[in-house]
Image (cartoon, rainbow, N blue to C red; front, side, top):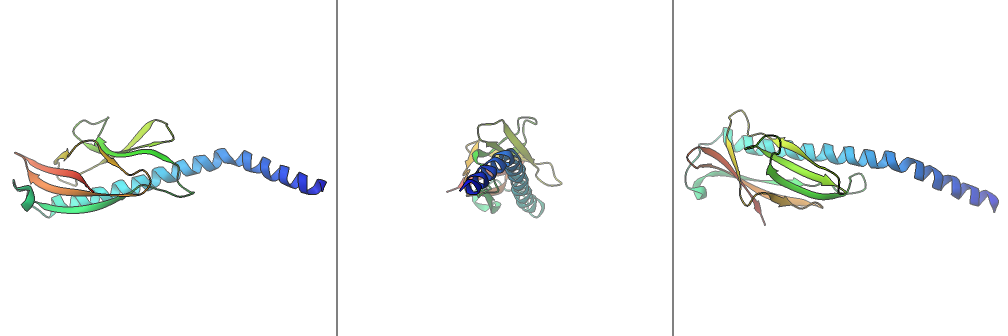
Length: 154
């Protein structure tokens, strides 16, 4: 009986000692996965901009939809917020911002490809699902200058 109690106590102590390392790994994994989603969205924007000409009628504009997946599961940290926002560091640029467990908000900047293009977030900031996938529409329009217009679908 004493062996069982000691085994359980040792197991609990080991689990307690390893929890900070597990949380650090979950935070790093979440940041890596959000960075990958940023890259996917950047490629979608770059694809629309590189192969198209902006037009003034949004219905006729080149467009694509992209799926942005917030990391979930045991290996990912719990997210309070995921959103497309205007970059805090670089006004006029867009970023994918996220916040883990009430901590500070972090962001990954999203480029528009080799051509510098204005970005318009429709109903900014665009809040995305922190526990799954969100679909966004990317349109390449002419608002007096070439502009990438991003909106949430659904």
